[in-house]
Amino acid sequence: MALSEKDVRYVAALAHLELTEEEVKKFLPQLDAVLEHMQKLNQLDTSQVEPMAQVIYPAAGTPTLRPDEPRQTLSQQESLANAPEPGAGCFKVPRVIERE
Amino acid sequence: MLSLTAISPEVLARYEAVIGLEVHVQLLTRSKIFCSCSTRFGDPPNSNTCPVCLGLPGALPVLNREAVTMAMKAALALNCAVHPRSRFARKNYFYPDLPKGYQISQYDEPLASAGWLDIEVAGKAKRIGVTRVHLEEDAGKSLHEGFPDSDRKSYIDLNRSGVPLIEIVSEPDLRTPEEAYDYLTRLKTLMLYLEVSNCNMEEGSLRCDANVSVRRAGRTAFGTKTEVKNLNSFKFLQKALAHEIERQIGVLEEGGEILQETRLWDSREQRTYGMRSKEFAHDYRYFPEPDLLPLVISEEWKEEVRRSMPELPEAKRARFVDQYGLGDYDAAQLTSSKALADYFEEAVRRAGEPKLSANWILSELSHLLKEAGKEIAESPVSPERLAELLALVAKGTLSGKMGKDILAEMFSTGRAASEIVAGKGFEQISDPEKIAAVGREIMAANPKQVEQYRGGKAALLGWFVGQVMKATGGRANPQLVQEILKKELGS
Image (cartoon, rainbow over all chains, first blue to last red):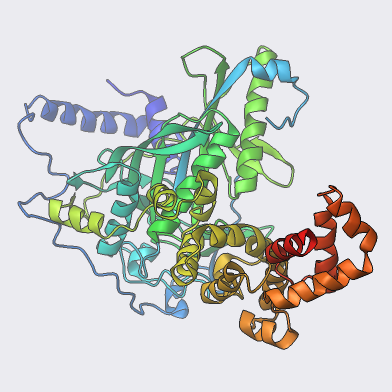
């Protein structure tokens, strides 16, 4: 197994997930299996192949650029329509503490 | 260096600081980088938002062409190579003012790299490397204070979410807080010349973070660095850097170790604070942004941008020396802002007299502006009006002293020089007959001095000139007075 429980906890913390001890034990082999599969794919020689993270096509420029023209979109009311707790025109969230 | 702690100058001198700056510049586009919302500052919160910048599911970004153009201008002015192909990446982190949970930025393939900016250290040019210039979107704004429930709640305004930024990363080539200050000042001047940003630090359109480490003088290996954030004014930048450098030296002198961490500058307490450091705080899990195509910049586009670039400060300074015969110092002062340089050129275009114009703009006018707390662009005396005044001074119609008084009056009343001169009988007396008559009167009243002068006491000429000036209320042309008196006294 390439992964440890520590890795599982680290990844969960990055994703702001709280896992119980049982869940850590349950996810460890699953996550490990995913990585194992990736390693299998890595055996393929792709050094001559362009990555496809984004679709690449032959074009002189980037044809999908937008002109710099502002448009009216949502009103403040509409923007806040889904907010669990709006206030003073803002989205209210639990206080963010940045410093010790 | 300004010492903020108890460390002695001898100890400080044993160390060298290594500083690199990361500067975020908000671009002056009218709409956001990936959606058509307005970028206007100061609108009611969340009134310039849409599904894209609110991070609603399914919304897709479309890149603003003008943001790319402006970023290219900045990159070219910083002597960077603009890459024919760059791409966007997602920088993942959780913060309430980042609604998507990631910031669209550029990572492994930035827009431009490997440039430089020259600063001046002890009168000599020093080249500071620019590692890269890349495009990214701004996050929203978190308001932590000022509401009745601010002890429990933060308020989020997403008007700024998606406003285009460029990040300009320098090489760790800076050695003192003063160098960092000069670098940032020149960078700001450059951006203002290019008109790609208003660089208003109070509104957050220019933001600066610094990477700081110290090492024993003479060593080449870098020490462990800290990242200092929150350097949101030019005044704080130097203080915060000086403080952080001395803090690190203090730790090392006591045999301690520098922790690699992010520290926040607190301007009220004049010190930096370590932020709660978690080991994964910097794991942003970058990956290519699948919702945007790679950014392809054709040679034609790049050339079009290059052709549209204005004359930059360095070139303008050299031209001012060349074309107007100004000294290096005056030329540097006049080109320190585009507005000032434009003012000068407009005045010269009308009055001729480049040296006189430079002197008056840099001394008298600057002084009046400073006293009134105004920028050159807000000057109540237009370049046309100043040119009119300087023409009168150059012709000798007005003496320098009278000119100064009139300028002050033009500044406070907004009236033209000719109006003030006509209303006051301010005009200089340049009629030789009138001056000679006054001279003869004074000679008649002071026969002893006339005798002394004729007996060889040539220094008395100055005294006679003074008497004539006094008698004419300072309005006589002093040069003419001298010539005429010499003649009168000699006969």
